[in-house]
Image (cartoon, rainbow, N blue to C red; front, side):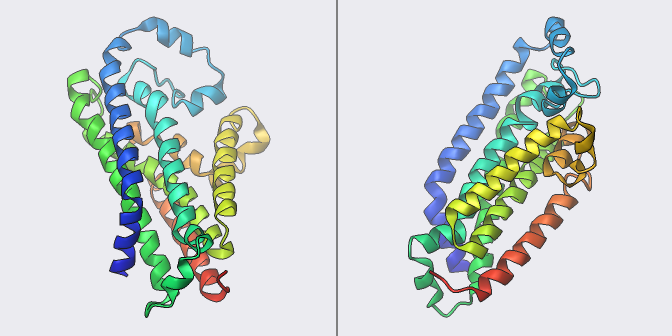
Amino acid sequence: MLSVWIHMLRRRTTAAIWWAVSLAALGALLAVAYPTVRGNSELDKTFADLPPSVAALLGLSDGNLLTSPAGYLDSQFYANILPLTLLIFAVGAAAWTIAGDEAGGTLELLTTNPISRTRIAVARYGALLTLLTVLAVVCWAAVAALAPSTGLTAGLGIVRLAAATLACALLALVFATIAYAVGAATGSKPAATAVAAGLAVAGYVAEGLSHQVTALRAVRYANPWHWLLDADPLRNGLTWQSTVLPVAVSAILVIVGLAVFRRRDLR
């Protein structure tokens, strides 16, 4: 299992490095730009008139002002850009773990070695978790290093930054695990990517509309985006909604994907 885990990390290292550098640069840029926003009451007045659905998707509901550290970081990063970026990376990597390798004709060769399918699949999923964790830590470190000097940690602290980053990574993990499970069950990388990406987009739109469309409010509690945005870990810290739920759902999806993968014929 260790060899399979290392092998996947090696094959994804270059891409992961570029993603890490980009996320670190983005996080640093947002931190450095905050002093230009801080104390600008005109911005608060402008964003106060946003529709409830838009304000919720920006993390500016419940009186969260854009010029406050929490409002700025939520609206510019933790409520949209960071979870979406981590999601895109994680879904792409998850779709490759089994389905991509199978489509390339190398997975069947790997299974001829004295290692079970379950161990291969678990090792690949472990490598996915490792890559996602590294990106999240790099992003947190970039923001946390510059936040104190720019005033972004006022009333928050680097622990809250870590909580928000972790919650975003867990959101990405849910949709990445969907791609992983679909890929393991079908052997199709396009299907895995399309299903996960489609559900992610639909969930994001549904979360915004649920603040105005009554019919959507009943189902938003099953929406991973609601678990993140409603919990607002940057202001409230980690909760069962932003941590336990995504971990539990991801675990169930992995088990289902493994069960199907063990029984189907490889292409």
